[in-house]
Image (cartoon, rainbow, N blue to C red; front, side, top):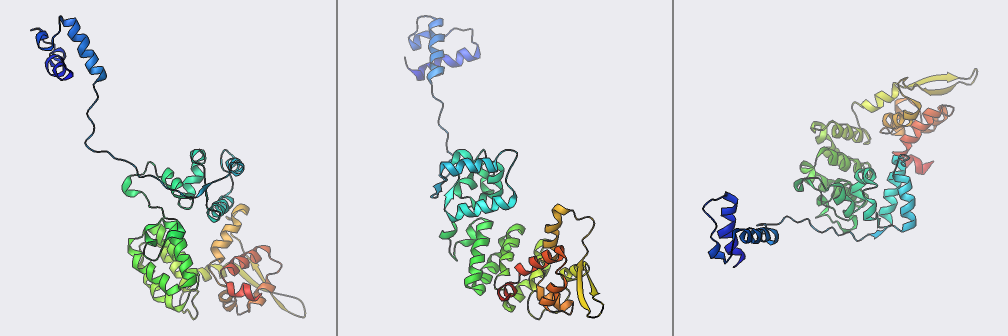
Length: 333
């Protein structure tokens, strides 16, 4: 008696509820109860047929060292629970992990899931795979360590890593970086296009003007707005500057002094802007404008603008945001 004969001779009749009796002689059984017991044992130990094909996940290779235990404990206290770190602190932590080539412990990924999802592209291959574990295979991103990219492979990385690579290339060779972005532009989504375009703040020149002007018809409003902000920063720009107009509407020019008149500037902050959002509003309103552009519009020098607003804390903060985009002014001051 074999398992094959049990499956072919006995099981079909048992399952169909036949009344004509079981072919006991074919399997060498003495009575129906014995045949039923043998069939039960056959079902219990019979292995199911193997699948025709297997879908396996690629092994995740992350060569970065795991964060030391002491640092792990501090990180868990900072980034988990109700009292989570601020966005700026979280970004600083991510940057430091990248600099030291460290990665989170695999056991900590579920406990830090909000943090991991927010910064997965910069936390390494293992964190990215964890954050995309429920993402369809066709939509998953490829992780490349930044130091392993080249001009031929940079476009295969995640959006953040791609933007970082182009940012570095803008420092070493702006023209080559622009050519690479132009070649890959149509294959990038809106978020990636914004990140890549933001890298053009470095070494911005007249050579970038044709490409920036071509983005006036880009399908993403964010891209069009950023391209316009870059265009107006080019030397000799002659055209409408919406960001400058919006800033000038908030600046009031007056005179102080009885005998020796001096210009004084004040800033009119909208009533809808709360104290905790004021810095963000100042950065968004004044950050895209160069100090020299603002000074020219006010018919003043840069030093004159700073002196005229020295008693206005909010205006000085706005000038600081503008100075961060004007490296020439910072280096000369």
